[in-house]
Image 1 (cartoon, helix red, strand yellow):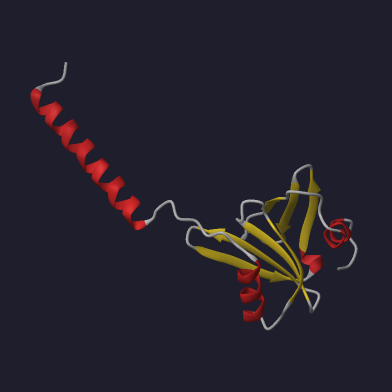
Image 2 (spheres, rainbow, N blue to C red):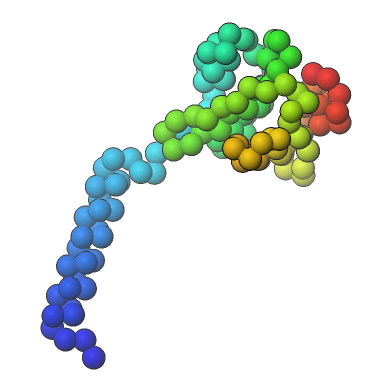
Length: 134
């Protein structure tokens, strides 16, 4: 059986938790970055390259692009920022799945990226997934 002191402690704890949730909401804890073609162009320009072709996941959380120099740009929206990698085509594992594309990396520092696509993958992505060149 809970005592009066237990009820006071429980109520105080609940109030503090609600206060912290309110502060987090004001600070935008649910904010997420949505990638678009302008973001990809900016990321590519930062690498001294330009984009030849790109696909962006249906939710805007990830993107995969072929750069003019033959490298590939992989970007992932994370909270209010973007994490990106540029890699040669041979350094990535690509597999087409029923509803999208899975990009895996040879190192463990960058988790696999799953892109949900609204339609079939473009030909250049299919060629890469089949082991061909860009």
